Structure formats: C-alpha cells, structure tokens
Length: 203
Ligand code: GLN
Image 1 (cartoon, rainbow, N blue to C red):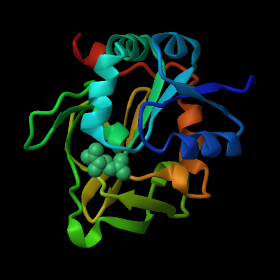
Image 2 (cartoon, protein in one colour; image 1 turned 30 degrees about the vertical axis):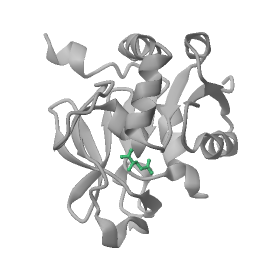
Image 3 (cartoon, rainbow, N blue to C red; image 1 turned 60 degrees about the vertical axis):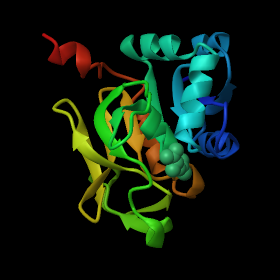
Image 4 (cartoon, helix red, strand yellow; image 1 turned 135 degrees about the vertical axis):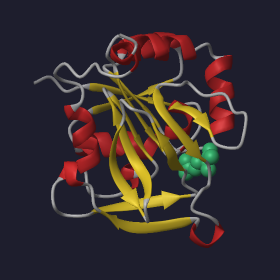
C-alpha cells in the first residue's frame, strides 16, 4: 500500500512531534497551512496547542469550510487535546467556536491544577490488552458523547478517546509516546467504508 500523506495542521502547536510520530509508523506527515495544502492530503491531524488561537487562525486562513467539506466526503481527521476541542460540537461552560465534526461536548483543562500534566496507563481495548502510556497536558475531558460516537477509553470515569466514523479524538498526546498504536489505529481508519455520523443519523 502507498505511504499515506497525513496533513498536520501547522498554525500553532506540537506539529513537529506529530510529523516525527507519523514517520515512525511509516506515514508521511505534511504541514498544512493553506487550502491548497489541505486539498492534497489523505487525512488531517489537528495537534495540541491553544484552541481559541487555532480556531481564530483556521477562520482567518479560510480553512474551516474545506476541512468540513473533506471530512463530510470521508477524509479521516484526528484531533489531539486542543485538536479534540477544535473538532468538538461545543465546549462546556464557554461560548467558543469549533469545527463541529464530532458530536461531543468537551470541557477544557478539566483534570484540574493538581493534575495538569500526567502520564497514565490507559486501558484502550481497541488497541489490544496492553495499556497505552497516555500523556495528558492541561487536557480536556469529554462530558457528552452523541449517539453516533464510540467512547474508546476513560480516565477516572471520564471519556478521553472517541471515534465517530472517520473522526478520532484523544484528550491525550500519543505523538509524545514511543508507542505507535494510536497512530496505527488512525491510519487504519483511512481505509474501508466508515462513513457514519451526521449523514446517517439525519436519515
Ligand atoms: N488547554 C488547551 C486548550 O484548551 C489544550 C492543551 C493541549 O493541547 N495540550 O486549548
């Protein structure tokens, strides 16, 4: 199979770490800054960073419509931490613009001050029996999971990994772990007919 071209939205955040992690699972990570770049990639990662800043930049560079159109047409998209917030339907307690690609409500910085950053052995049954070394940095949790969304992992009872069709969201940062299983899981989402979600629930 050809090496997939995976765009990494490169407006702000941990872009280089994602490109390096993609190389470790034999995918080509391509920085995406423009609509032209977006049209060329097979999938898109929105990395960790600061969600209000990145959403403003997405709007300023006119990328929102192209991202939404490509996802509606079946492009795989993965948001890590800030990227999950940007992909969510809404953000609890604040009026914050999002791309609304995943039918979930997230709460920013939800794990609290005591626990702003942590490495947690997370059970993720979809990845096999061995726990995943998940790195959380001022991470959001997912408070509401819509009917078309699968919850794939929980930390202390709070959902931290979800999938809806070809859209994946993680509260944590797999690009900072040596374990490539979440990246490989994402690459597996590029193939096969996985188009569930909004279009099918509207019927
Ligand atoms: N707390 C950040 C936000 O709400 C996300 C943190 C991260 O991506 N590491 O935008």
